[in-house]
Amino acid sequence: MANILVTGSNGQLGSEIRELASKTVGLTFTFTDIKELDITSPEALSKFVKDKNFRYLINCAAYTNVDKAEEDKDTARLINATAVKNLAQLSIDNNIIPIHISTDYVFSGEGFKPYTENESTDPQGIYGKTKFEGEELLRNICQKHIIIRTSWLYSPFGKNFLKTMLNLGRDKTELGVIVDQIGTPTYAHDLAFSILKIIENIDKNKDFKDYGTYHYSNEGVCSWFDFASEIQIAANNNCKINTIESKDFECLAKRPYYSVLNKSKIKHIFDLDIPHWRVRISHCINRIIS
Image (cartoon, rainbow, N blue to C red; front, side, top):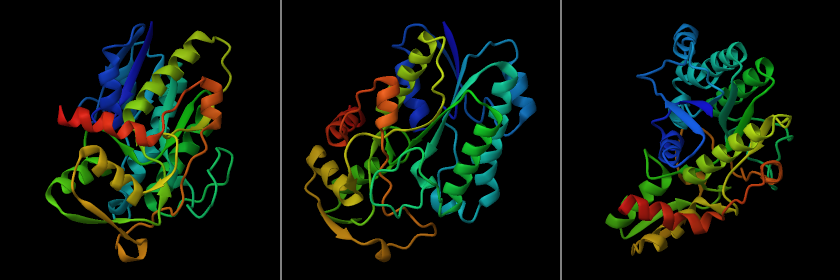
């Protein structure tokens, strides 16, 4: 039975893993967040894992406020890079396999075809830069690791685009949403399920050697405008979604114009069947309503 430590477990992805954990046979979980475990402290980490025999570590902790990161660089780097270094060293010292969640923001967003794991990175803002620093620290310290880059995460938990659009769509008759940023929504429930499948795959294959970086989002491509429009349809909201351009929406951090992720590698290695983003919206909305 594999023993798994989950950090940042009160966020969207961690909460989804917690929901699935109760239905999972053969895995035991320890869920932590900042109150239970300070991942920026090597001493706290070492003390926490002592004699617990963790086999896997799923790091869901991150500084994700993209705009605030531009002004709070030190905190963003502490959580997105330094803490990942600590977790990497902890993994080496305790024979743990870390599964770390990263982002599409490690790319420039100026491409025109889905990014593969091998393409050059060029993060444009502090959030993307610190997340990439974390990736590199993990790679350099811990050979046996899984990094999963994802995009446009949403769930019934915390703050996210779907919940914002859902609430605004109930109260407003019209909304303006950006049409010239292209990517793919990721239902955190699907990502959580896939992470558990990855662990199951590694656990069953004692000769597993395909460690490294992977991309995961739901299938398909859309703009934020498309995503917002589908949310209103799924929720039966009578709210008209109008298009606006990025230049008309002021924000501190530059957003990628195109950040679609190529998922061929993760589907092939772990035999994953990834649903299209359109078909998963209703599932999430129904959970929120119920």
